[in-house]
Image 1 (cartoon, rainbow, N blue to C red):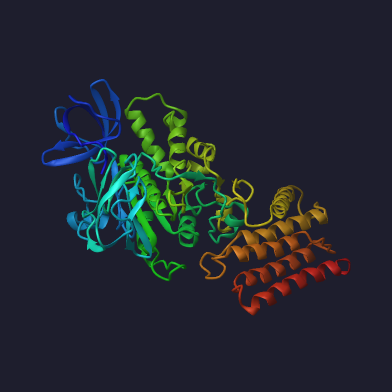
Image 2 (image 1 turned 90 degrees about the horizontal axis):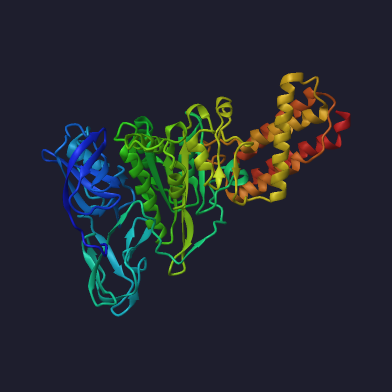
Length: 585
C-alpha cells in the first residue's frame, strides 16, 4: 500500500543479550524496520532500534531462547506496521496485532512463539458502496467508498502516505467483497496506476496527518463522573493521566470512563498489566451494557493485551498499535478515546532496553530521552478538521503506577509536563472508601469546566480551607476550633460526601449527565455560600449529617421524575430553616 517497493535482505547475528540481538547486515536497512530472527523453522519478529555502521540492534518480540551467533536474520524492508480496515472493532489483539482468540484456537492455551496471524479477517464479507466516480480527483485520507461496520459507517480511504492528487480511473460498483478486494484504481500525475483495497498498512510509530487542520480542544468529553466533569474536565482531543498507588481504583475508573464517556469508539491498551486484571477486562467488557445503544460495550471497543508475563518488548508496540488505530478512526470523523494501562510498565520496558543498549542512564536508570518518548506519544492525541470539513478527535488517557504512590518519580513527572489534566489518586481517600479516590486538592485540569468558573474557584477555595481546618483540628481538637471554622470544615465534608463521591454501581448516581451536574452544582454552591450559625458543634454536625442524607437520596432520583424536584426543595428548605433560625438553635 506504500509508494516504496519492498526489498528484503539477510544479515547474521553476532551477539545476543536477552531480547536484544546485534546483527551484521550486507545491504541498507532503516530504523524501526522489521526483521525476523530465524531459528529452526521459526521466524521471531524483531524491530531495529539502533544502527551503527554495518551493525544494527534489534529488539525481539518473542522469547530468544535458542538464538545464537551465526543465525540468520531476514529483513523485511517494511516498518513495524498495523493493518487498518473494517473488522477492527470488537477485536482482541496482542501488541503486534495478532488476534488472540484466533491464536488461542491455533496454539491452545499456551501461545507458541513465532506464530503470526493477519490482523484483519481475510474471509469476512463487507458491503462496499462507492462514493466517487471515474474522473474524480482524490488525495490521501479522502474517502472513495464506505462499508457498514456495526453502528458506524467505515470509510475506505486513499492510503495516507500517498502524495499529490490522483485521478480515479476505475471504481467498483456496490458489491460484497473481502478486505483484499481491489475496489478502485487511481492514476498519479505520471499516469501510473495504483490499487486501493478495503485496507491499508501504516507504521505504528508515525502519526497519521492526512487532515487539513489541528484544532484547539475546547469541547468537554463528558464522562458523567461529577468530580471529573466539574472539577477536572477532559476535552475531546485532549490528554490526561491517572497516577496512583496499586489498588487505588485506576482500572475501575478507566472502565467507568470507557462506558460513560461521550465518545464513539474506545480503545484499551493493556501494556504490561497483571494478567489477572487483563482477564477481568476481557470478561467484563462483553457483559457491560453500552448505555448509548443497549448492546454490548464491545460493539464499539477494541482491546490490545500485553500482560506483564508477555515479552517486554511488546509493551511498547501495544501502545503504538492502539494510538495508530485510534488515529485511523479519527480520520472517519469519529471521536475516539484511547486508554493506556499502564504507561509505567511501558517505561520499564524502555529502561530495560536502554540498559541492554548500554546507554547513559537518566534518573532512576530510565533512559535520558524518556520525556521525549512520552511527549511524542501524547502529542498524537488531538482534535482535527478533516479534508471534507468533518471533525474527529483522539483523546488519550494514560494510567501511571508509581511505586509507593510517589508522584515525584520520573514517569509521573515526565507525563505531567505534557498532559492537559492530572487525576491523581489518593491512597488515603481509597482507604477511607471515598470513590472515585481522586484527590480534589492535588489534581488539576487546563480544560474548561461545565460550570461557572467563578463559582468553581470559590468552591475549590472552600474545600481547601475546610481541609486546612481539618488538619488544625487534629492538633487542637474540636473544642479549640472556632465555630465559623468548624462550619467551614462541615461544608467541605458535605461537598465531598454528596458531590465528589459517587456510587458507580447505582444506575442513577453512577451516571450524572452534564445538565444534571450543572444544576446540582448550582444548588450545592448555594448551600456552601449560605451563612449559617449554630449553638453547639454537635447541633451543627447533626444538621449537616441530615442534609447529607437528603442530598445522597436526591442523587439517586432520576432528574426527570417529580420526586427530584421534591427532594431538592426539601434540601433547600432544611438549609434555609437553619439559616433563618440559626440564632435560636
